[in-house]
Amino acid sequence: MSKRFFELADDVYVPHRWHLATPTNSHGQEVDDRQFLYGTPVHVEARLKFPIEIAGKPLDFTQAGIGVPVVHVRVASMFAELAPDDVQLIPVDVEGQPDQYLMLVATRLIRCIDETASRIRLWTHEDGLPDMVGRYASVRDMRIDKARVGDAQVFRCEGWMGPLIVFREIKDALERMGATGMRFEEV
Image 1 (tube, rainbow, N blue to C red):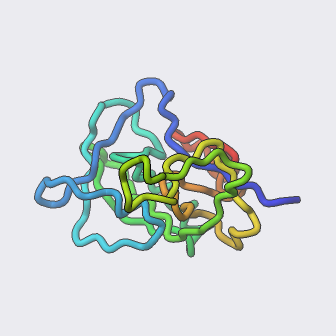
Image 2: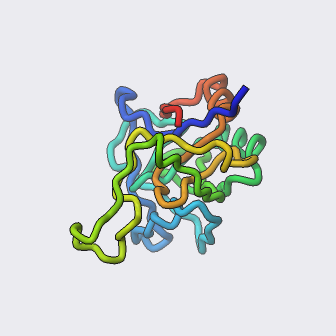
């Protein structure tokens, strides 16, 4: 049986759900959250806080700010057990929440987008951004080359780091535990 992988994303259609904002540092200043999407370990000076942008039902998985995964401790424990070499779990505070939450950082970046099977558009000189020429401008209907993934359980795709990719075993474990706030799309 071939390996199956899924993009793990926010389920924005959960009724009355909360929305978390960009994290802030101990001085209340927003933190550049792009660093948490690069597919590499990060160093965080002090505990971050995620303000609630829209109040609502707390979820086990939420993409805050520009897509930073924030997970309930029970989800974090599952990731730590099934993918210890692929994730960094950083304790964070979520405004007004007594439960423990952690930021999930994928620490593996893999060049694995199947450019033939995916619908991609590359930046060109005509786009007026010379530094971006030849890079992905968009990736739709993304498919990955599973042969390039190796033993990774959780990762981001080099060149298109937005999507968080998980192995089927992770997806199945999240569904078995009834974790809320997530949707999956096979890649």
